[in-house]
Image 1 (cartoon, rainbow, N blue to C red):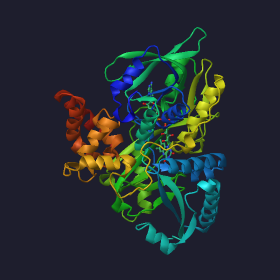
Image 2 (tube, protein in one colour):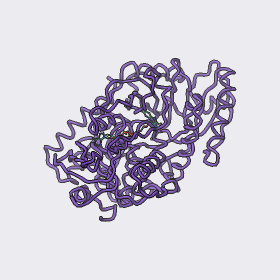
Image 3 (cartoon, rainbow, N blue to C red):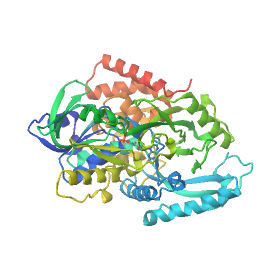
Image 4 (cartoon, helix red, strand yellow):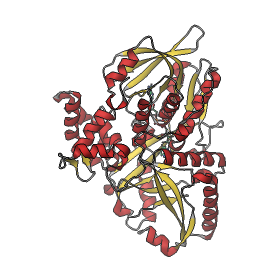
Length: 525
Ligand SMILES: Cc1cc2nc3c(=O)[nH]c(=O)nc-3n(C[C@H](O)[C@H](O)[C@H](O)COP(=O)(O)OP(=O)(O)OC[C@H]3O[C@@H](n4cnc5c(N)ncnc54)[C@H](O)[C@@H]3O)c2cc1C
């Protein structure tokens, strides 16, 4: 296997084509969960393959609120175990990917004495739960300080605020870095490769899968000792592939976010409203020089890779945000709207409200030894990976190997991070990209979003990007930060990718057309 920096799609496919090769573990799904499982497996020394039918983090894992958090909401629900687990993982992620996870202060504005007591005390418990891995202490701050910290916040009846710390990150960049870590450690992680069926031995135990190259249509049978189903909201389809009478063990809840210009929320502190008019949580989080506001929690019937925001969700966020901010955003102010689907482990009694369904993860092992992982959150992806690999070792009688991932630096690890540098999220690659930019210093494709020609080339050469959408949605975050601007630059991006991948004019036109159709759904008309 060539050293990571020179790995191409062709190199990865060569490994898949090797019919003699028996993988220890094949992971289906390249979101947070699958990447966590594959990295854990590869770190323990198992021969590991991860296949993603679309791009890494194309699903829910690029559509989160971007928080690495213990979960203040779960504290309110009394789920201390989950808060402790997530708080520990938050601390580990800050340590292992400091180039992507920022220590973020949050402020809860307080309008009555009961909330003052409840949140001041509650957040002390939150601090205590994270122990040594705390990101800083919470405190009550005066009305004057709250208004200074949250300019524009509704001040009628404001008593003060409770300030606390959590993590804030870039979700799809972390996914790309996890894929790079898997490759760097000798594993294979490939996008645009879909599992279309599972293979079984004479005893009906799973011993392989057929995967299909989404670009060329070619199918490859592969052999493996274990298969993990980490397909988020799509787990049920894979469970049905294994056993057509599998029970549905998942429910799907949609969350929507709006992205606004910073002028609507010109603060470095994030705003947290623990209980909106209908009892949900609302965040306004500074992100890449914009502000992300969300989220909703609506049960939906169908899972799709490209979910669309519902009108009622958009209205709810705009109205709720307007009731806290003095400068009130309207539809035309929205730079981008994105929706994501939470894969929630279904409760036993089917009628629970989504915000009360536990976010903890669950592992299901089928009779033919398909390992399915459900639920969880981005913050706990590492622990989920560890739990799955532990379970596989146990179920398949493999000798237990301790995971080293708690202390393992993630690709891009860099200690000194300048958050004001528009290239900060490349971590240890930042200087290499900047070096390449010298000499082409003026080739910014988007001045507003600070996207340079060199970043597009880099994404194709080193980050396994294959399409305009991969570059504009997940290697850079243009689609989420300003969907109109991203459409404007799509033709230039397509030209650069075409040159790198040797594609023709027809490919460029198809790419620009497909991207424009997709990005139009992120614009509010
Ligand atoms: C609105 C919202 C906000 C959230 N905010 C936060 C937050 O701030 N912090 C936090 O910690 N968590 C957050 N979460 C939770 C977190 O985002 C999810 O738990 C996590 O991203 C789920 O990852 P996943 O890998 O399980 O699913 P996904 O990211 O959906 O990945 C599953 C992948 O499987 C692939 N796949 C499906 N079928 C196949 C097949 N046959 N072959 C190959 N690949 C296949 C899909 O293409 C997909 O990419 C949020 C979730 C939502 C919805």
